[in-house]
Structure formats: C-alpha cells, structure tokens
Image (cartoon, rainbow, N blue to C red; front, side, top):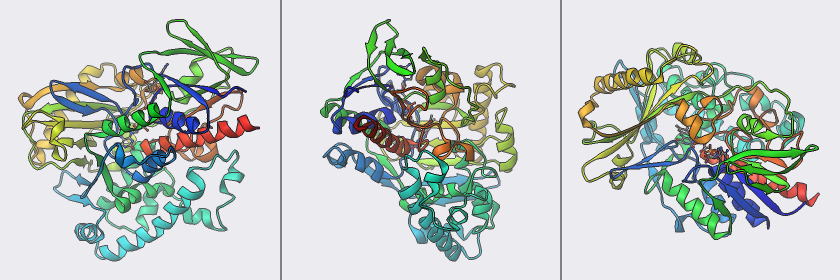
Length: 489
Ligand SMILES: Cc1cc2nc3c(=O)[nH]c(=O)nc-3n(C[C@H](O)[C@H](O)[C@H](O)COP(=O)(O)OP(=O)(O)OC[C@H]3O[C@@H](n4cnc5c(N)ncnc54)[C@H](O)[C@@H]3O)c2cc1C
C-alpha cells in the first residue's frame, strides 16, 4: 500500500484524521465540497454578524488540547478557550428554572429548589458517574475493538451494571434525583444522541456529568475560531485541503478502493480513502461495490435560526434550554412531527463575545429538533413549519421575559433539515448522525474500517465513537491508528 490518503470532507473529523495521518508520515489530501472547512461547525457572515452554524457548546477541552499536542503544538497558541460558568439555564413554562454550574456549591444551591438533600444527592451522583466517565473514556470510547467481546473485556465483573448499560438514562438519573424537573433537564441531552431518556442506556449520564463536572467552554471569537485554529495547524503540518470540490463517487474494483471521482469528472487514483461524510451517505457514493442493506437509526433533524438582533432579549443567558411540560410526550411526538409543546435551545454568543455583532447588536441561534426527513411524514411544507415554529419560539421566549419582535431582527438565516442535508451530505437530514441506541454503540456502531471494501475507512459522527465535536476529533485519531496499523500489516 502507498502512503497517500485521500479524505472526503473537511469536517472536524476529517481534519483530525488528516493531522494524525500526517504525523504518521502519510501524504494527505482532503477534498471538501463547500467553500469553508469545518462541516457542521461552519460560519455564516452577514452584515457584520458572525454566526456559528452548528455546535455552540464546547466540552471536554482536553480532547482538543491533545489534538494539538499530538502534533507538537499547544492549543493556547492558536485559540483561547474561556470557561463559561454558569453554563446552561433550563426553563419550564410554569416558572421553574434550573441553572447548571461546574461550581459544586452553586450547583447544589440551585438544585435545592427541587431536591431535599441536594448536596448529598449531587455528591453521590457525581462520585458514581465520575467513576463511570473515567472508565468509559479510558476503555470503551476510544477502543477500536472489533467485537463486543473484545470491547467489554476490560469491564470488570458486574461492571456492566455499574456502567448503567442495563437501565435507561431516565431510570439511572432517578436513582439519585426525585424531581421530574432535574431528571428532565439532565435527561434532555438524549435528544442529541438520537433517542429518548426512557430508551437510551443509563451509561449516557456521563454526558450531563461531563458538562456539569468539567464545565462548558467558549472559544474567543466563536466556535469557528476553534475550527480555524485546527485548520491552521493542519495546513502547517502539510495537509492539502482543496475546497469547493465535491467528490461524486468512490471507485471500487474487486473489493478494493481504486480512487475517487470529483464532480468535474476528474479521477484521482488512491488506495486509501477516508470518508468524513455520513456513513449511509458514503454508501450511496460507492461505484463498483454493492454494500449490504443496513437498518440505520438516525438522530433527529433540526431547524436552526440565526438572528442578528438590534437588542439583547432581556437577561437571556449565553446558553438556555426551554423544556416542555411533558418530556415523554414531546419525545414521542418528535418521532414523526414537531412536538406541540416545543423544546428548543438558544445561544446568545454575544452575551460572552460582543465582537460577533456590530456594536450594540446581538447574535442569537435557536435550535429546534425535528424528525428526520423520512420520518417527517406529516410535514409537507417546511416553510410553513418554519413560520409556525418561529411564532411559537417568540411566544415562549416572551413568556419568560425575553421578548423579541420581528422588527428586532436585522438579519435572519434559517436552515431546515433539507438545507442541512444538502450542504453537508447529512443522511436523511439527521443533524447529529447515527443514533446511539444500544445497537449503534461500540463495535455495533458503523465501524471506521469498511468490512467489505479494502482501503475504505470512515471518520466522524456516524462512526466510532460517536457524535459531538470532541468525539469526532477522537474519531480522527482512531481512524488514523487503524490505517497506520493496517499499512504496517
Ligand atoms: C445544529 C447542530 C448543533 C450541534 N451542537 C453541538 C454542540 O453544541 N457541541 C458539540 O460538540 N457538537 C455539536 N453538534 C455536533 C457536531 O457538530 C458534529 O458531531 C461534528 O461537527 C460532526 O463532524 P464530522 O467531522 O463528523 O462531520 P461534518 O461536520 O458533517 O463534516 C463532513 C464534511 O464532509 C463534507 N462533504 C459532504 N459530502 C461531500 C462530498 N460529496 N464531497 C466532499 N466533501 C463532502 C461536508 O461539506 C463537511 O464539510 C451539533 C451539530 C448540529 C448539526
């Protein structure tokens, strides 16, 4: 095998894989269909407003630091991560609200509005989940195990029960917290993983734990400043990134990759291709190979609003989550439609970094979950849905004292699952990739090496370990390790 690798897509997973492969001596060329790198973590600039398109919460900062240090650099020389505390405020229509903080006393004080023995309960939950978090990260998340047996081999006897795999996220949280508000808030993270807290394994309590224990971070200059930092380091290492160049197909002959075909019909020969595009989308790009039909369960879609505002909407925090009164019903409805009592998330990045908008103005990002395109059978007209959702978001914000009038919006961009799909090749308009239901985790997830086609690898949210910026950065390392081991034989 030659030591040249072609990567399809310059999302964070693709860039991470490229950097790790460069460090292992590979020649790496990345073909990106869009003008800007970063994939879902992209940027819209309009009339002095700068919006991050997708991710807005940075957690596990050490994963990004490790990416830089693996290449002999220090992240702080490229981008500054600011701690954001308190991190997120949850709101309910009845006036209840819960503020998350990585400061134990502050967190316990706020929690005591909902729980009798908040300090004790919080301490117990943090202690148990910390053990689970450490173990999961050290042994399970970054393992390139091929079989379930290999994967769980490091788990000690009775360890599976301690990992929470045998109960749901909601019932796991219920072992520590009685309040339905607290369970709803901490369980709401399930949405990003493609399930409900009543179905996903309790192991995923490590998600709210990670946010609570290690805090949330904000790159000065926005999330895209982190993307630019990673891109700059990749270029310094000699990674070639060719933007505005969609890849039309991945060519396969006799079960081996032979190259890629660009949309301008140029054929680029190569023996190793890493696809950063969603795995099911990649399967549709294959020419010369038939792939077995898989049953994919995807995470939901999203409608995202990007508003340039004349005013700050009241005392809205940088990150806020507006939850429905009945979470179970909302999650049920989300399978096929937009829930009546709309859950949504807002990010007012200018509350932390005013440089993202013209003086005195603000940027606001609103994320509303939707079903994936094939599941959204009740939705025929997305523009009507956008109008209705916008009205409901205004109404709910006003209910909490964060009024926005249409005339306050100087700039508006809206992406529905259709735009998300078309821009980044997201399968079925799913925002976060393959779900993390039990049958899609560890070695049961789409593997990062194709089992049927020699020379074809995957990186990013739909392969191992999973979705989210830190995970796809880790995915890049894992895929690079896999390739390097295969080439060494
Ligand atoms: C709305 C939203 C909010 C999110 N919020 C958070 C958050 O707060 N925190 C967090 O950690 N994560 C968040 N995520 C998840 C995170 O953004 C993703 O998990 C991560 O960015 C995915 O990276 P990736 O490398 O797997 O893929 P992508 O970012 O999808 O990159 C794939 C790349 O491939 C390119 N491509 C596609 N088809 C082709 C082709 N044919 N030829 C060439 N190039 C192609 C695409 O243009 C893209 O650049 C969010 C995601 C969304 C959508």
